[in-house]
Length: 617
Image (spheres, rainbow, N blue to C red):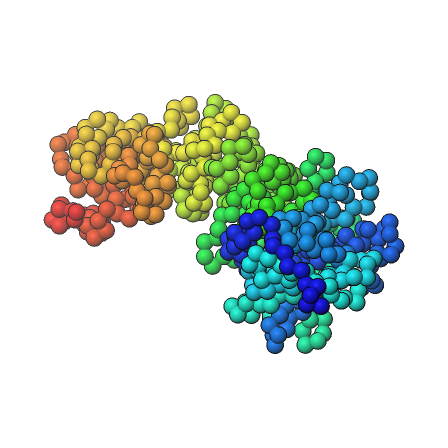
């Protein structure tokens, strides 16, 4: 037998390529098992297909893939009863890097007129060589279906391989990996089952792991998304959703469809029924699972944009070309078209569901803040997303849309007014709303962190501009209200500006107040106050904290100060108190809390405080 062993060199540059496969091509060592299992499943599919025209190649009664760990011998064996390989095929497919028998077979089928073509997931070429990541020696014994001879291929991955006659009772292939000392974890049956369940759970062929002499099924064996919708129950959908997302809820929406035509793929997506618990800040990437012919490839293909990352599920395609390592996707127009199609389908579902305001509410309360991110970052879908947004309002209970707001606008109103803050309930009581309520003008109350950003990008909706009521002066002259004549603040305003010149950009009167004496607003053209507060908290303040102090000329305190200014009295102390009161109303701390407390105490006691006259820096 020794004399019959043939030694062959691999194809050109094989040493360098093998080193690349082993050390750089794959990101995880466990991938080797996915590659070998995929190849084995392919071999069974090929035999099943060829048996349609050649009954002599018929599969045995129980086709399967067996994974057999042997700790004592430190070997891992992957066996199948598929099509097998003869001597020439072993040399051709395993003797040349990136020579793919499956790929060649698939091309041949594409050129044939056969209607029942197998769906092959493997690339028996580079994928096979991933075995050398964990094995110091690989032995392959194979017998071609329909032939009596078996052949053995062996290599240590150092530039050459051997071929020799062998024996095998039935057609198929055995791959024996002599494991490296640092790869013994892959001889643990539980570890093997976990890897198979992760990467090959939905291969329809049974994959058995042998433990203590007994075969245990390692894969589910059914790809639910490939079944007709009419054969799947709601309970089955819900169970699959829980399995994928490791959650316990029932999906709010299930999207299951098959795209056919120039682009073919099957998708089964779920919009969860509850917001997942995230103990730390969640990543912004979509984790939708990409499968190619049932085999899991990656959940990092960004099949949905970040603002739809709450959607989970599977997209399975026949058409996606993969590069040699299979886990690293090529930059391909196919993947881009799949992304566009899947995004459009999810948006279409949301548009349909949004027509039922009661049914849409649970989704919005769970994922509305995430959806808003799309208005900020996705110019292509910005208008569509805006139509899906819902808000609290100063004019009514519950949620309202931009379209509903526009339908309720007063005659002559050209802007959609909104107010941004940290809490919708607190915003509903904000002094900023007083003048708008008095005039019957509705204001949307925005309380998510992203609300400080996205209105700038949207700008308008259905021809109506969006306008923050704390950003510059809002012209309310078109909407008159009855009230006492306002006093002249010509003497007061210059004194307040001088007293507060280090703390405010301007002091001006406003018609936006009714019951409160003063509020703060951003300068025209400056970021909204809510955005300024957010950036300060994040340590990213972009300039001095100088807002505009707005006064209600009809308020008793402002009237008194105006009278004091007319009489030539000093209003410096009250100017500081007025500013700090406006800051507190807006959710900020006073400039100097201790001095503020002394001022308030003195004002309540009706006496001047000497210490309050010299505020703390």
